[in-house]
Structures are given as C-alpha cells and as structure tokens.
Image 1 (cartoon, helix red, strand yellow):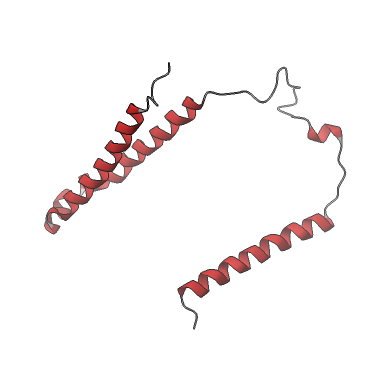
Image 2 (tube, rainbow, N blue to C red):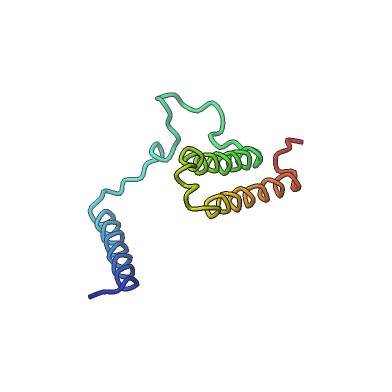
Amino acid sequence: MLNGYETIVMYLGMSLIAIFAMLGISALLGPFRPKRNKATTYECGVPLFEASIKRYDVKYYLVAVLFLVFDLETVLIYPIALDYRALAVHGWGVFLEVFIFVAVLLLGLVYALKKRAIEWD
C-alpha cells in the first residue's frame, strides 16, 4: 500500500511522462511548414493598423489584483454572515477567526495605501 507522499510522486511522475509523450508524438507526427503569413497577427480578417503590443501602466494590474483580493474577502465572509446563528453555537472561535482574517486583509490595505499603490499620480 502506498502512503500519501508516494502516491503524489507517482501521480506527478505519470503526469510528466504523459505530457512529454504527447509533446514528442506531436513533434514527430505533426507537419512543420513554417510560412511568413502564419507568424503574423490575424484578427477578424482585417490587417492590423497599429502595433499589436501596447504598453499598459502597472497600476491597472495592481488595481485589478487589489479588487480581486477584496472581492474574495467579501465572498469568503458572506456565508459566515448568513449562518452566524448556527456558528455562534461554537462560541467565540468563529468570531476570532473572522476577526483575524479581516485584520490581515486590513493590514494589506494599509500597506497598499502607505505604498500609494491606489493613487494614479
């Protein structure tokens, strides 16, 4: 009988074998006919008018990540708020866990505000 670590190693090994086998078979059997048109950008049958690579400010991504973090906070706390009476049977344990969760996220928010991550200037 395999223990937990041996099972994980076995699954990872089999996955790697399957991945490399599929890549090798596709490289051997697939056609290789490079052409210049295949390497160009194609969108809706219309040639590009400008460069397809545009530079975006990092703040767009930073705001998106911060939104996801705080949106997930809401998603994770909402079920606890709905079923608070059933969880209140367990005493202060659930309240303490939610308090620690919110405190860690508030520390992250304070850090983001101190680093001026949300400001656009």
